[in-house]
Length: 131
Image (cartoon, rainbow, N blue to C red; front, side, top):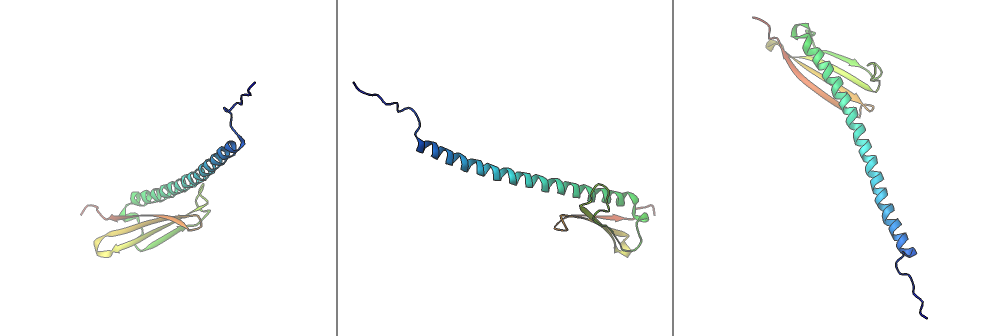
C-alpha cells in the first residue's frame, strides 16, 4: 500500500517569508501615515496663519488711506495676545512708501512654531479720494 502525502498546505518557511514581506509593507505604510499626518498638521497651521494675516490686511484696507497712521508704524501682537490663537504672533508694519506719491505699504507677518514658520502678506494702499 502506498502512502499519499498532502502537498497542498504551506510549510513553515513559506509562512515566515510571507510574514516578513507583510511586516515590511505594513512598516512602510505606517511611516507613510505619519508623514501624511505631519503634512496635514502643517497645512492646517499655515491656513490659520494666512487667515490671521488676511484678516488684519482687510482691516487695514477697510480703514482707508487717511485713517492709517501718517508716519511709519509697527504693531506687534505677541504670542498669547490673540484670543484663540496663543501659538501665533502677528506683526503689522505700515510704511510711507514715498511721501510725495500718497502710497503706503502694509505688511502683515504671522509667525508660529517659535518663529520657525511664517507667512507675509503685503499690499499698497493709495490716497484715491476726490481731488
